[in-house]
Length: 450
Ligand SMILES: [Fe+2]
Image 1 (cartoon, helix red, strand yellow):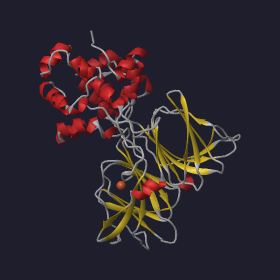
Image 2 (image 1 turned 90 degrees about the vertical axis):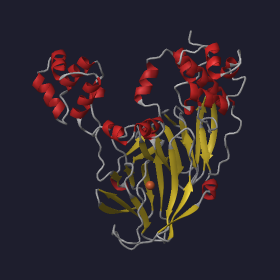
Image 3 (image 1 turned 180 degrees about the vertical axis):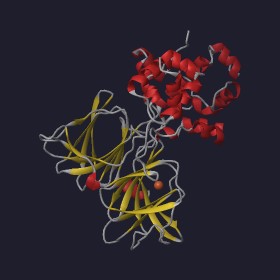
Image 4 (image 1 turned 180 degrees about the horizontal axis):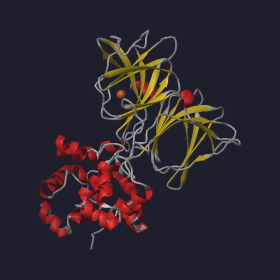
């Protein structure tokens, strides 16, 4: 991938590595001399590493992973490749990443990378359809299918694109046009073709791993297929969720009935059924189990055949901050309750109220300029204000917590996809339980624990 701002020497990375080593030694209750004895280091040198005066080497990480019950990656920080919290990728950089993918013995797609960051799980591609079809037959032999992939896929359509998807052995084809969108579950086979070559036919295929990749995938792949399968919770099944929480707490139906005041028959019925308990029952059950009500409520999905299609013409639209002289107009694109922290929007940047802030969000943000006019971007990072510009076809990545102000001399449109990172609500509530000075130590441990 072509970039203008590859991470060079990055002092913050070295400091984060030093902090991880200190935190690992703390977790294992090793002071400096115990750590030196374990790692075979001369006396007095451990502090050189944890203070950042000595760079952490592969050799040291390898030794730590051999003698301590941790993994090499536990001592490896991640790179911040943003500039003041943003990473912009120009249309010409995307064009330079162009490659033609052949399927079925001929050119099928042209792929171009758009803004990715080492901080987020996005793998967003601009993809042009090179295979032309004249019908909407999912069994058309000119259509070449993939086998599906791990990443979630949000797709935004531009032009006459046919979208094919397959679930439970049934194949479907939907004729898409500009503004339509779809959200798809992992491993659902799919394909795209063009119905015409008289106008552009392409998609923005915004794939992302979200909470499925990273640590969770590494942990589960070590457990194996059977153990991972046993951890899967059925969507919308409140009884299965209650049984799982009870099993984790070694709770019996009789004991839970005693504690909650519900009858044993009612507790057993709630365990057996997928339907949700009444709110008053949820409150007493949660209290009896010592958990929050949210732990007893199973999310549902609105996907059908593994996908959720949102036609542009029926998509909800609203003005921001209100109908009176709005700065932005939003169109809600395909999403699903299974991913409550994913937000997909078409953003119209209007001209009547420039420099209106979009409130900071906990999500990672991806932007792509769909319109023919540039967008000015103003943002604040670490108390400083910055300005940039996204031209048509440019894309951007924005770290969580940034307040963005988008303005344009002429109205223009962006695609926006916001996703959650590793900081799930559980993590964010845990941060909320910390004192402010503890948050500083959480992100960069700098001292011995005692
Ligand atoms: Fe895909």
